[in-house]
Image (cartoon, rainbow, N blue to C red; front, top):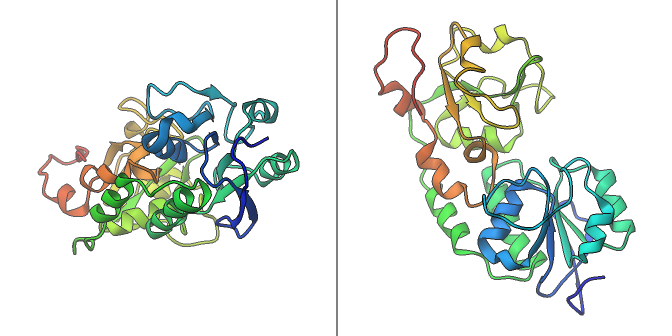
Length: 272
């Protein structure tokens, strides 16, 4: 099925053996972050992506449904050298079914910023057989400096009615830590717990970040729910994606110092 001859054995981030191409020519991505990363590096090799893969905006490839329900027949028809997936974004069942179809699937596992840099470098150099892209070096450089000393307490809802927040052992929590924030929900067993609104909107929460994905928080849907904690709308791509967005994320996302430096009347939300 693969178009590249003489595949070689390697192990993905979960330790599973994968017959990777020596130089990938046809790739299907099941993860928006990875889609953007591959398109930014070798766009012509990307032949398929999910409906949720929104970056780059002008990406013109075959769509293979969603991250949780990929169209296996459509993927097979594309004849990929490699399908790239993520442990958190994609179901193990779908990965196993694709592999049973004879398709090589490389699964990434990313829970910290350092995981992202290591995993992405392995994806390009080992799984895809390409040189590491320049944007990856730029991203690592951008995040090399230590976090500022000012520390604030932050909460990140990702859904409402019922409310769900980013919890412990997640990429977003680690990224925020590097910006000087402590996640209010950085404990417990659930990485994305359901909580009551009162647990978010309370004294001691210095800022509530409302991203535009997976729930699309906007000026009219989200901030109005909070009476106590200040809020800021942010790009979900900058907060949760681990591709080229990391080059700009450090400067674009709010820090405790930047929020504290913006004077505002009581009740007015800070700007990122």
